[in-house]
Structures are given as C-alpha cells and as structure tokens.
Image (cartoon, rainbow, N blue to C red; front, side):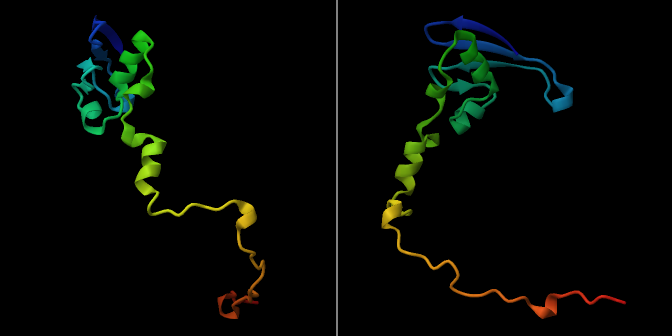
Length: 117
C-alpha cells in the first residue's frame, strides 16, 4: 500500500492499495481519517477496529495502533461485562479436596471388534 498524509494535524491520509490477485484483492483508493475514526472501506467505522488501511496510516506516522482499538475489545471491558456471570476463582489453597478416582472405568464389551479368524 502507498500512503500519503494530507493533514498531519487532523491525521488525514490517502491510501492506495495495490492488486494482489492471489489473495483476491483488487486495487483501490481509500481515505483514512484517524481523528474521526473513519475509512472509506467501512471496516474501521463498522467494527471500531483498525482495518489494513488504518494500520498502514498509523505506521506512516509511527502512531500507536492500540489507541485506535475501541474499548469493547479490551480485556478490562470484557471482564466488566462478564463478571456478574462468571464467579471468582478462589486461591488454590482454598479449593475443596477432590477424590482422584471416585469411580472405576470398565470397558464396554459390546464395543469390541470381532476378529474374523
């Protein structure tokens, strides 16, 4: 991809993607506006996660890509969303004792193959 930065203050780029027929990608031109978190391909806008054009634009100015990943993808957000469903796991010394062999496995004779012989 070829990247041209049109406005350093507003972080606005023009990204040209070249043909990659073996990957099913045809050439295209995309406008990336990092401050507004938009890209013409629509992926960045829809998923709130950097597309390939945004990644290329960030690399062009050596910007931190993680700052453009939405909060919903971050571990703390996921934890806060699921903490009411998943109970806390206590420290290992507080775990209840477990019997290692509470039952004995017996082979099922019906599942054995009959040898022709």
